[in-house]
Amino acid sequence: MFSSETYTKRQKELLNQINSGIILLPGNEESPMNYTDNPYRFRQDSTFLYYFGIIRPGLVSLLDTTKGEVTIYGDDYTVEDFVWMGKQPTIREQASLCGVGKTGSINDLINRVKQATKSKEAIHFLPQYRHHNILKLMNITGFTAQEIENNASIELIKAVVSQRNYKTGEEIVEIEKGVDTTVDMHIEAMKMLKPGMSELEVVVKIEKIARATGGDISFPTIATINGQTLHNHYHGNVVKEGQLFLLDCGAETPMGYAGDLSSTFPVGKTFSSLQKDIYSLVLKSHYACVDTLKPGVTFKEVHRAACLTIATGLKSMGLMKGDTESAVNAGAHALFFPCGTGHMMGLDIHDMENLGEEYVGYDGKPKSTQFGIKSLRLGRAMEPGFVVTIEPGIYFIPELTDQWRAQNKFMEFLNYDEIDKFRNFGGIRNEEDYLITPNGKRLLGSKKKPMLIEEVEALRK
Image (cartoon, rainbow, N blue to C red):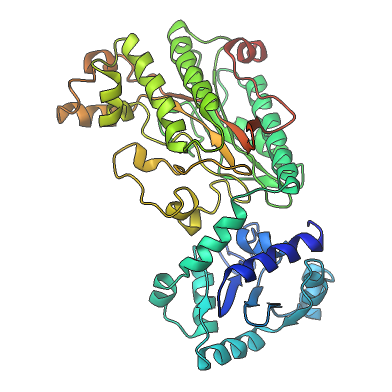
């Protein structure tokens, strides 16, 4: 945990931003794998973690905007629990660590909320992503599931986003720990991969590195020879000479802060000539984004820099044609780049995605509906304190190519005969994490992930 002063400051700022009523912030419950006493690893809700830092299931916080009071509610463990778990701290003891002096039972909470309902106080809560927490809020408030889904407080969403978007110095220290561990994971994968290995062997080895820090992985690992599938979590293939291996993984620190990096490298010792051409173009688009990144520039502009670079390069290779600006405006480049250039990162790998991308990534403005850019999670102007990923890529997706060709889509911009020659190529992306500073940006982490072709091939040998 951070100091109690950090959490107290965060709680007070939230109370000051909400005009009236009470705020309910439920922590997460245990999630059973196949029966109650066999749960998945517990992961606290990130917003609860941000304001209280307590990693324990079964808690709900109530912030009273009128009185300026904060209370944490939950039921203490009993001696029967201690038989299985060992002695545990009381909720009051844990609450004191985050500057909260008032605690109560869940029944106390239910009575407090009944009082709020009777006196017609506003009840603020965030969108819920776990069904158990929906049921918990239903029990506490008396609302229906539909009311829980429809009545999330926009005022509270905006208030939380306005705090969590701006990372403090102590948060950056934590994020950089996650990034450094993630670099170790990538370097280990680059060193160990050999033809004849399974994808799973790599996953097992690198996830051990994340777990050894006392944390865990920050999201399910993508480790695949089928890099054209953007979120490929299948690890059952045996890798062969001549293929490319795409690794997208991250470490989460014990305090919950994430790292997120991607690499693409050959299964053999070196890239082929064609692989080098596409890899170099992806790298060029990556650094075009980095050069654009600074306060005041929208992330849409950063994304567009990648799109124009990719379209220009593919045109020079004969895969695209026509006017490059017009092709990008129309979205023809999205055949090769159907996703976004990056996203916010912090306590969540896609920071606060559960609160709505339109609020986190677009400052309340609507997103585009155009294929490709509609998958851009971040479009707003960059500000100091934002932590973002940079991860443009080129992907050859046969199913998408076949569909577009059958529809005669963008015939003026796409050379389908040339594109067909890349049906078995796969995909390439590299990813880094950046902090927006008052004067520009800073690459996060004290360790450098190999990116240049010569750096990657040096590790492969």
